[in-house]
Image 1: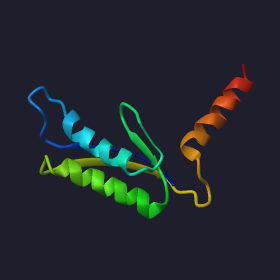
Image 2: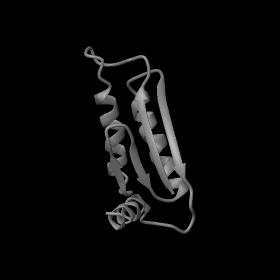
Image 3: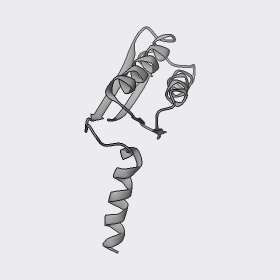
Image 4: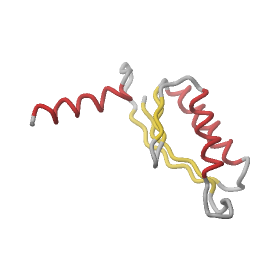
Length: 102
């Protein structure tokens, strides 16, 4: 399955309004999980089996909660059993279609 999620403290931030430190802790957990992942400016994408992906999302959320009494979590999932390599595969298929139209 693929999961795109964003987790951040709600109601607390550094003096400059940044939530970067808490978000960095969440991303550290994702990267240490060993699962295929990609972080963009708005979301972190993660690929794996249901239980392992959800365990990482939970751990990342709990890491943010360590610095804030309230946490915002946005999650979107593509559950498609039997398919792997979709973190890059979906993008490659669209790029190939775009290239065919040039």
